[in-house]
Length: 126
Image (cartoon, rainbow, N blue to C red; front, side, top):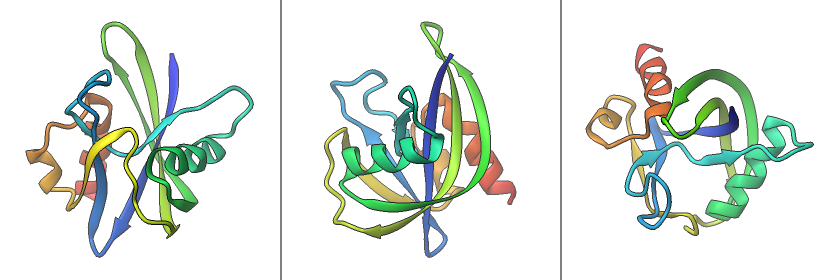
């Protein structure tokens, strides 16, 4: 199982989602930004690193929200979601084609990655 972290960044009742670059696996799908945990990293450190590498932003990682396990047939991931606060930096995309700020309910209209769906349901309920 691959351990992956995701940032739930909220601004004025909207959440940041990012569209995976078309040349990447699952390209064109939307997701919460984040990435794989490397050996020796805590989830929080991995998430800070991934957000800086992929979006060029500095963040403060907040509380753990939940995990979702998803089987993509060729591999299985555990996606751990954490609250995150954007502290500084202009959003510069290196792994994504675009970003959007949307409400949790609006995410249902986006072609989201499978592992993100339980997290969206959690955000809608809460």
